[in-house]
Length: 166
Image (cartoon, rainbow, N blue to C red; front, side):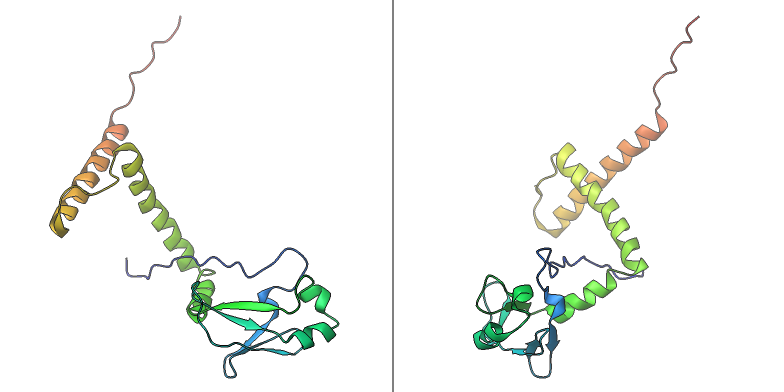
């Protein structure tokens, strides 16, 4: 088990309406601005919103005079981009999602999560009934024993052979 576990990061930065996506804008970390495809800076007040994001706004005057407005912000006066506070970490996670180690980890995680889903749906293991860490550990051990015995029984016990028809 010596490798790290990875959790997927959903990337919703692309758009399918024909307009520029967030990937078309370049973030300049040193100046703390986004640069639009036309080369104009998008600034922020620095205020962190409830969704853990910082909004970057283009100038209405820049957008009004821009030849790319129809492809950038056809239904708004100026373009706006939301940057998550943890965007740097999300970028690292997106990069790791393309590795073989991530794919292997995802497959292993699916196997374990399917076992918990089975416990919840077939054995009413939707909450812990014993108190404390030792109680939780004991409940999980009992649940694992039940699952292992069930798997063993299904593999060892086969249905009786059907009599051959003459």
